[in-house]
Amino acid sequence: MRPADLVLTPRGLRIAGRYLPCTIGRGGIATDKREGDGATPRGVHRIVGLLYRADRMARPAPWARAIGPRDLWSDDPDAPDYNHNVLAPYPRSHERLCRADRLYDLVLITDWNWPHAVPGRGSAIFIHRWRARGFPTAGCVALSPEHLFWLAGRVSLGTRLIVR
Image (cartoon, rainbow, N blue to C red; front, side, top):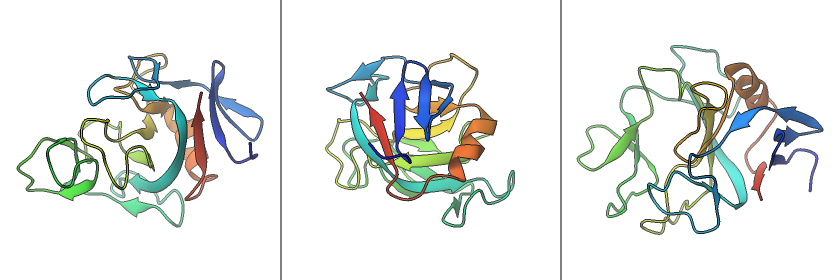
């Protein structure tokens, strides 16, 4: 392991010897991840993007990309752009990235089932803000807003998220 790795442990997300409390998917950790199972996939996942709401915060890192009302994420396994950022209007099943709540104000994107998505294997494993401490996600890893912002300033493209 490398010092910059993000390692999911029972104590939280470990980076450089520090533990950040986090929550994971309601389905626990899964070896055989499927769309809609609510599980966080086991494996080594690389950070491939950083999105943020420029209308709600300052750019957290030089490589971050601002998102707006047209930004969506395709979660339709039958769509050719499944598990990719798409723009509205979009006729297929999707998740809105620019949400009314603050859940996706800052999002680290992993390479889970990306860029060549296998239909039904699951989409969008992000690291994002939690709803509340201990409240599970739909499969993502979630942190407090303060820890997420701190983390975003310390990771880079290719940083590894290790889920055992």
